[in-house]
Image (spheres, rainbow, N blue to C red):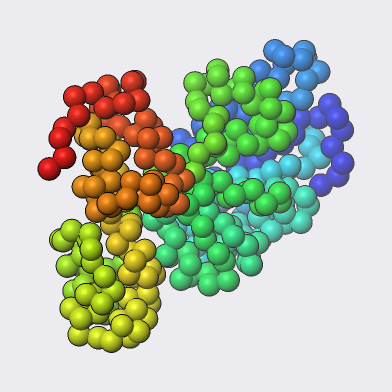
Length: 342
Protein backbone atom coordinates (compact mmCIF):
# COMPACT_ATOMS: atom_id res chain seq x y z
CA UNK A 1 0.00 0.00 0.00
CA UNK A 2 1.37 3.39 -1.00
CA UNK A 3 1.11 6.31 1.40
CA UNK A 4 -2.47 7.53 1.43
CA UNK A 5 -3.02 11.27 0.81
CA UNK A 6 -4.69 13.01 3.76
CA UNK A 7 -7.84 13.82 1.78
CA UNK A 8 -8.26 10.29 0.39
CA UNK A 9 -10.89 8.11 2.10
CA UNK A 10 -9.57 5.19 4.10
CA UNK A 11 -10.58 2.06 2.17
CA UNK A 12 -11.90 -0.86 4.21
CA UNK A 13 -12.46 -4.09 2.31
CA UNK A 14 -14.97 -6.78 3.25
CA UNK A 15 -14.53 -10.34 1.99
CA UNK A 16 -17.61 -12.01 0.46
CA UNK A 17 -17.41 -15.79 0.38
CA UNK A 18 -20.07 -18.53 0.08
CA UNK A 19 -22.33 -18.73 3.16
CA UNK A 20 -20.85 -15.60 4.72
CA UNK A 21 -23.32 -13.73 6.93
CA UNK A 22 -24.73 -11.11 4.59
CA UNK A 23 -26.30 -9.13 7.43
CA UNK A 24 -22.79 -8.52 8.79
CA UNK A 25 -21.42 -7.57 5.36
CA UNK A 26 -24.25 -5.12 4.66
CA UNK A 27 -24.38 -3.93 8.28
CA UNK A 28 -20.69 -3.01 8.26
CA UNK A 29 -21.13 -1.30 4.90
CA UNK A 30 -24.00 0.77 6.26
CA UNK A 31 -22.14 1.57 9.50
CA UNK A 32 -19.11 2.92 7.64
CA UNK A 33 -21.35 5.02 5.39
CA UNK A 34 -23.14 6.43 8.45
CA UNK A 35 -19.73 7.16 10.01
CA UNK A 36 -18.65 9.09 6.90
CA UNK A 37 -21.88 11.11 7.06
CA UNK A 38 -21.25 11.90 10.72
CA UNK A 39 -17.66 12.91 9.95
CA UNK A 40 -18.80 15.34 7.25
CA UNK A 41 -21.53 16.69 9.51
CA UNK A 42 -18.98 17.39 12.23
CA UNK A 43 -16.10 18.75 10.14
CA UNK A 44 -17.35 19.68 6.67
CA UNK A 45 -16.96 18.26 3.18
CA UNK A 46 -13.19 17.78 3.50
CA UNK A 47 -13.53 15.62 6.62
CA UNK A 48 -12.01 12.12 6.66
CA UNK A 49 -14.29 9.43 5.26
CA UNK A 50 -14.34 5.67 4.75
CA UNK A 51 -14.40 3.99 1.37
CA UNK A 52 -15.97 0.52 1.43
CA UNK A 53 -15.16 -2.24 -1.03
CA UNK A 54 -16.36 -5.83 -1.29
CA UNK A 55 -13.95 -8.56 -2.42
CA UNK A 56 -15.76 -11.62 -3.72
CA UNK A 57 -14.54 -15.18 -4.11
CA UNK A 58 -15.27 -16.16 -7.73
CA UNK A 59 -16.24 -19.60 -9.02
CA UNK A 60 -12.72 -20.16 -10.39
CA UNK A 61 -11.23 -19.54 -6.92
CA UNK A 62 -9.90 -16.06 -7.68
CA UNK A 63 -10.74 -12.94 -5.68
CA UNK A 64 -11.89 -9.69 -7.27
CA UNK A 65 -13.57 -6.44 -6.25
CA UNK A 66 -17.35 -6.67 -6.64
CA UNK A 67 -18.43 -3.38 -5.06
CA UNK A 68 -16.89 0.01 -4.32
CA UNK A 69 -18.59 3.01 -2.76
CA UNK A 70 -16.14 5.41 -4.43
CA UNK A 71 -14.87 5.86 -7.95
CA UNK A 72 -11.28 6.31 -9.02
CA UNK A 73 -7.98 4.81 -7.92
CA UNK A 74 -7.15 3.83 -4.35
CA UNK A 75 -3.88 3.72 -2.44
CA UNK A 76 -4.92 0.32 -1.08
CA UNK A 77 -6.82 -1.16 1.85
CA UNK A 78 -6.27 0.10 5.38
CA UNK A 79 -8.24 -2.86 6.73
CA UNK A 80 -9.73 -6.13 5.46
CA UNK A 81 -12.66 -7.77 7.26
CA UNK A 82 -13.33 -11.52 7.25
CA UNK A 83 -17.03 -11.76 8.18
CA UNK A 84 -18.91 -14.49 10.08
CA UNK A 85 -20.39 -17.55 8.41
CA UNK A 86 -23.71 -19.31 8.86
CA UNK A 87 -22.33 -22.71 7.88
CA UNK A 88 -19.74 -24.32 5.59
CA UNK A 89 -16.64 -23.10 7.39
CA UNK A 90 -14.21 -21.13 5.19
CA UNK A 91 -11.47 -23.76 5.10
CA UNK A 92 -9.78 -26.02 2.56
CA UNK A 93 -10.12 -26.01 -1.21
CA UNK A 94 -13.52 -24.31 -1.20
CA UNK A 95 -11.97 -20.93 -0.32
CA UNK A 96 -9.58 -20.87 -3.28
CA UNK A 97 -7.15 -17.96 -3.32
CA UNK A 98 -8.64 -16.21 -0.28
CA UNK A 99 -5.83 -17.15 2.16
CA UNK A 100 -3.22 -15.84 -0.28
CA UNK A 101 -5.28 -12.68 -0.83
CA UNK A 102 -5.49 -12.09 2.93
CA UNK A 103 -1.72 -12.56 3.32
CA UNK A 104 -1.06 -10.19 0.42
CA UNK A 105 -3.22 -7.43 1.91
CA UNK A 106 -1.51 -7.88 5.28
CA UNK A 107 1.91 -7.57 3.62
CA UNK A 108 0.74 -4.34 1.96
CA UNK A 109 -0.11 -2.84 5.33
CA UNK A 110 -3.81 -3.63 5.82
CA UNK A 111 -5.09 -4.54 9.27
CA UNK A 112 -6.74 -7.97 9.01
CA UNK A 113 -9.96 -8.32 11.00
CA UNK A 114 -12.03 -11.46 11.59
CA UNK A 115 -15.47 -11.88 13.13
CA UNK A 116 -16.78 -15.15 14.62
CA UNK A 117 -16.30 -17.93 12.02
CA UNK A 118 -14.13 -15.61 9.92
CA UNK A 119 -11.38 -16.67 12.32
CA UNK A 120 -11.05 -19.90 10.32
CA UNK A 121 -10.12 -17.92 7.22
CA UNK A 122 -7.61 -15.94 9.28
CA UNK A 123 -6.15 -19.23 10.55
CA UNK A 124 -6.02 -20.63 7.00
CA UNK A 125 -3.96 -17.62 5.93
CA UNK A 126 -1.28 -18.49 8.48
CA UNK A 127 -1.31 -14.97 9.96
CA UNK A 128 -2.68 -16.12 13.32
CA UNK A 129 0.18 -18.55 13.98
CA UNK A 130 1.61 -17.89 17.44
CA UNK A 131 -1.12 -15.34 18.14
CA UNK A 132 -4.02 -15.17 20.58
CA UNK A 133 -7.36 -14.72 18.85
CA UNK A 134 -11.01 -14.72 19.79
CA UNK A 135 -14.02 -16.20 18.02
CA UNK A 136 -17.47 -17.42 18.99
CA UNK A 137 -17.17 -19.64 22.07
CA UNK A 138 -18.74 -22.56 20.20
CA UNK A 139 -15.77 -22.60 17.80
CA UNK A 140 -13.06 -22.66 20.48
CA UNK A 141 -12.39 -26.39 20.61
CA UNK A 142 -12.56 -26.90 16.85
CA UNK A 143 -10.11 -24.11 16.11
CA UNK A 144 -7.78 -25.16 18.93
CA UNK A 145 -7.73 -28.74 17.65
CA UNK A 146 -7.43 -27.84 13.97
CA UNK A 147 -4.77 -25.15 14.46
CA UNK A 148 -2.64 -26.17 17.43
CA UNK A 149 -0.27 -23.21 17.03
CA UNK A 150 -3.04 -20.67 17.67
CA UNK A 151 -4.19 -19.64 21.15
CA UNK A 152 -7.95 -19.03 21.50
CA UNK A 153 -9.43 -16.82 24.23
CA UNK A 154 -13.20 -16.76 23.87
CA UNK A 155 -13.77 -14.81 27.09
CA UNK A 156 -12.82 -11.67 25.19
CA UNK A 157 -15.16 -10.07 22.66
CA UNK A 158 -12.42 -8.16 20.86
CA UNK A 159 -8.64 -8.65 20.69
CA UNK A 160 -6.74 -5.81 19.01
CA UNK A 161 -3.10 -6.56 18.22
CA UNK A 162 -2.72 -3.61 15.87
CA UNK A 163 -2.21 -5.42 12.58
CA UNK A 164 -4.75 -8.14 13.42
CA UNK A 165 -8.09 -7.64 15.17
CA UNK A 166 -10.37 -10.54 16.05
CA UNK A 167 -13.97 -10.28 17.25
CA UNK A 168 -15.95 -13.00 18.99
CA UNK A 169 -19.66 -13.65 18.47
CA UNK A 170 -21.74 -13.44 15.32
CA UNK A 171 -22.93 -9.90 16.15
CA UNK A 172 -19.48 -8.72 17.25
CA UNK A 173 -19.15 -7.08 13.83
CA UNK A 174 -20.82 -4.12 15.54
CA UNK A 175 -17.98 -3.81 18.06
CA UNK A 176 -15.37 -4.31 15.34
CA UNK A 177 -17.01 -1.69 13.13
CA UNK A 178 -17.00 0.89 15.90
CA UNK A 179 -13.37 0.03 16.66
CA UNK A 180 -12.40 0.74 13.04
CA UNK A 181 -14.45 3.95 12.92
CA UNK A 182 -12.64 5.10 16.07
CA UNK A 183 -9.28 4.24 14.53
CA UNK A 184 -9.77 5.91 11.16
CA UNK A 185 -12.27 8.73 11.85
CA UNK A 186 -11.79 9.42 15.56
CA UNK A 187 -13.66 8.90 18.81
CA UNK A 188 -16.12 11.76 18.32
CA UNK A 189 -17.29 10.31 15.01
CA UNK A 190 -17.46 6.82 16.51
CA UNK A 191 -19.70 8.03 19.35
CA UNK A 192 -21.89 9.99 16.94
CA UNK A 193 -22.21 6.89 14.76
CA UNK A 194 -23.22 4.75 17.75
CA UNK A 195 -25.83 7.32 18.80
CA UNK A 196 -27.24 7.58 15.29
CA UNK A 197 -27.51 3.80 14.93
CA UNK A 198 -28.72 3.40 18.54
CA UNK A 199 -26.05 0.89 19.51
CA UNK A 200 -24.02 0.59 22.68
CA UNK A 201 -20.39 1.72 22.27
CA UNK A 202 -19.51 0.60 25.79
CA UNK A 203 -16.90 -2.04 26.45
CA UNK A 204 -18.23 -5.61 26.59
CA UNK A 205 -16.73 -9.05 26.88
CA UNK A 206 -17.87 -12.30 25.31
CA UNK A 207 -17.71 -13.97 28.71
CA UNK A 208 -20.95 -12.09 29.57
CA UNK A 209 -22.79 -14.18 26.98
CA UNK A 210 -20.97 -17.51 26.77
CA UNK A 211 -22.66 -20.61 28.12
CA UNK A 212 -20.83 -23.34 30.04
CA UNK A 213 -20.78 -26.17 27.50
CA UNK A 214 -18.80 -29.01 29.10
CA UNK A 215 -17.07 -31.63 26.98
CA UNK A 216 -19.05 -34.86 27.09
CA UNK A 217 -17.67 -36.60 23.99
CA UNK A 218 -14.14 -37.17 25.27
CA UNK A 219 -14.50 -40.96 25.45
CA UNK A 220 -13.53 -41.44 29.11
CA UNK A 221 -16.61 -43.28 30.42
CA UNK A 222 -15.53 -43.10 34.07
CA UNK A 223 -15.11 -39.32 33.97
CA UNK A 224 -18.37 -38.98 32.01
CA UNK A 225 -20.15 -40.85 34.80
CA UNK A 226 -18.80 -38.35 37.34
CA UNK A 227 -19.89 -35.44 35.11
CA UNK A 228 -23.42 -36.82 34.89
CA UNK A 229 -23.48 -37.15 38.66
CA UNK A 230 -22.27 -33.58 39.16
CA UNK A 231 -24.83 -32.18 36.74
CA UNK A 232 -27.66 -33.97 38.52
CA UNK A 233 -26.57 -33.18 42.05
CA UNK A 234 -25.99 -30.15 44.27
CA UNK A 235 -22.23 -29.66 44.08
CA UNK A 236 -22.13 -27.90 47.45
CA UNK A 237 -19.72 -29.73 49.69
CA UNK A 238 -18.48 -32.05 46.94
CA UNK A 239 -14.74 -32.68 47.33
CA UNK A 240 -12.04 -34.11 45.14
CA UNK A 241 -11.87 -37.13 47.45
CA UNK A 242 -15.60 -37.78 47.04
CA UNK A 243 -15.35 -37.63 43.25
CA UNK A 244 -12.25 -39.83 43.13
CA UNK A 245 -13.86 -42.41 45.43
CA UNK A 246 -17.00 -42.44 43.31
CA UNK A 247 -14.84 -42.95 40.19
CA UNK A 248 -12.86 -45.72 41.87
CA UNK A 249 -9.58 -43.94 41.18
CA UNK A 250 -6.76 -42.51 43.24
CA UNK A 251 -6.80 -38.74 43.77
CA UNK A 252 -3.91 -37.98 41.41
CA UNK A 253 -5.13 -40.34 38.69
CA UNK A 254 -8.65 -38.92 38.88
CA UNK A 255 -7.38 -35.33 38.79
CA UNK A 256 -5.22 -36.03 35.75
CA UNK A 257 -7.96 -37.85 33.84
CA UNK A 258 -10.64 -35.29 34.71
CA UNK A 259 -8.43 -32.39 33.55
CA UNK A 260 -7.54 -34.19 30.33
CA UNK A 261 -11.14 -35.10 29.54
CA UNK A 262 -12.92 -31.85 30.42
CA UNK A 263 -10.27 -29.15 30.18
CA UNK A 264 -10.95 -28.11 33.79
CA UNK A 265 -9.80 -29.33 37.14
CA UNK A 266 -12.68 -30.68 39.30
CA UNK A 267 -12.88 -27.53 41.45
CA UNK A 268 -13.13 -25.22 38.43
CA UNK A 269 -15.72 -27.51 36.86
CA UNK A 270 -17.92 -27.40 39.94
CA UNK A 271 -17.55 -23.61 40.15
CA UNK A 272 -18.75 -23.21 36.57
CA UNK A 273 -21.74 -25.45 37.25
CA UNK A 274 -22.67 -23.31 40.26
CA UNK A 275 -22.19 -20.05 38.37
CA UNK A 276 -24.34 -21.36 35.50
CA UNK A 277 -27.11 -22.07 38.02
CA UNK A 278 -26.72 -18.65 39.61
CA UNK A 279 -26.95 -16.93 36.22
CA UNK A 280 -30.35 -18.49 35.67
CA UNK A 281 -31.48 -17.35 39.13
CA UNK A 282 -30.21 -13.81 38.50
CA UNK A 283 -31.98 -13.65 35.14
CA UNK A 284 -35.33 -15.13 36.18
CA UNK A 285 -35.90 -14.58 39.91
CA UNK A 286 -36.13 -11.76 42.43
CA UNK A 287 -33.90 -13.53 44.94
CA UNK A 288 -31.37 -11.32 46.68
CA UNK A 289 -27.71 -11.80 45.79
CA UNK A 290 -27.18 -13.54 49.12
CA UNK A 291 -30.06 -15.94 48.40
CA UNK A 292 -28.74 -16.61 44.88
CA UNK A 293 -25.30 -17.39 46.33
CA UNK A 294 -26.79 -19.82 48.87
CA UNK A 295 -29.00 -21.62 46.34
CA UNK A 296 -26.02 -21.87 43.95
CA UNK A 297 -23.97 -23.68 46.59
CA UNK A 298 -21.99 -20.85 48.22
CA UNK A 299 -22.06 -20.18 51.97
CA UNK A 300 -19.78 -17.13 51.58
CA UNK A 301 -21.40 -14.38 49.48
CA UNK A 302 -18.12 -12.49 49.10
CA UNK A 303 -16.41 -15.60 47.73
CA UNK A 304 -19.35 -16.09 45.36
CA UNK A 305 -19.02 -12.51 44.07
CA UNK A 306 -15.29 -12.94 43.45
CA UNK A 307 -15.72 -16.22 41.56
CA UNK A 308 -18.63 -14.82 39.54
CA UNK A 309 -16.59 -11.80 38.45
CA UNK A 310 -13.54 -13.96 37.69
CA UNK A 311 -15.55 -16.21 35.35
CA UNK A 312 -17.89 -13.65 33.73
CA UNK A 313 -16.14 -10.30 34.14
CA UNK A 314 -19.18 -8.76 35.85
CA UNK A 315 -20.47 -8.69 39.40
CA UNK A 316 -23.74 -10.57 40.08
CA UNK A 317 -25.55 -7.24 40.44
CA UNK A 318 -24.17 -5.92 37.14
CA UNK A 319 -25.11 -9.18 35.43
CA UNK A 320 -28.68 -8.96 36.74
CA UNK A 321 -29.07 -5.37 35.55
CA UNK A 322 -27.92 -6.34 32.06
CA UNK A 323 -29.67 -9.66 31.56
CA UNK A 324 -32.65 -10.01 33.90
CA UNK A 325 -35.85 -10.90 32.05
CA UNK A 326 -37.78 -9.21 34.85
CA UNK A 327 -38.51 -5.58 34.01
CA UNK A 328 -38.67 -4.56 37.67
CA UNK A 329 -35.17 -5.92 38.30
CA UNK A 330 -33.71 -4.21 35.24
CA UNK A 331 -35.26 -0.81 35.90
CA UNK A 332 -34.91 -0.63 39.65
CA UNK A 333 -31.68 -2.54 40.06
CA UNK A 334 -33.08 -4.29 43.12
CA UNK A 335 -35.46 -7.19 43.66
CA UNK A 336 -39.14 -6.43 44.16
CA UNK A 337 -41.03 -8.79 46.48
CA UNK A 338 -38.04 -11.07 47.13
CA UNK A 339 -38.78 -14.79 47.24
CA UNK A 340 -37.67 -16.31 50.53
CA UNK A 341 -34.77 -18.73 50.29
CA UNK A 342 -35.77 -22.35 50.53
